[in-house]
Image 1 (cartoon, rainbow, N blue to C red):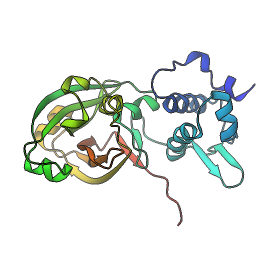
Image 2: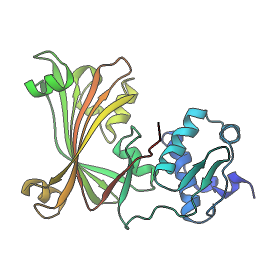
Image 3: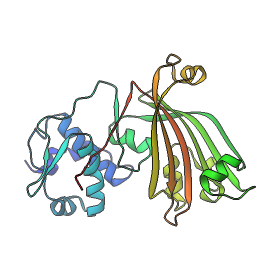
Image 4: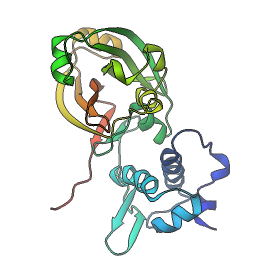
Length: 253
């Protein structure tokens, strides 16, 4: 049986970014044991030819699977299904800290159903704090998005995002994925600076997430940059500590 047949493409929808589609195919094949531990994956060139995708797309799909412990790269040999896939508690989500992706993309890549509940959406003049964080002039327009993020109906995080007025046409542009809306306007982030801090949830935040005040969480602060170097997004995301893990692939310099 060929590699493509093992992935059961016929049973998988192709909606969304192509790298997420390929990533989900391989993840499902590993989790259902159609790709057994130790199995070798075709080379990048063979995958490009088989799926008619660019090498950039292939590498983007593979990187998250390596970071999640499902695949491993062996120098001079290629890429293989891990012999001992990383274990995680049921219901937890692993986020690759080296990948610049949205919450929606993260959940879709893991076969989970993302959704949101809006807390507030507003448009106004930039505050002094926002102006400093985004390098904007006083009086500039800014869009603000506050929402609860869910995966398969389970609360995952509270997200507060600010986007400069030049990045979107209006609040209605963002229905599900902020990054999807930014990409549609040619303003998707190409790089970002992130900081992670351990926190205890305040009573108001805990109520929104359905957890107890003081429960542990992760605060991820992100400043993302558009291709022209301007800051396109400043986000503060408060993730439940019992539902989210951060992973990263490290290299010796």
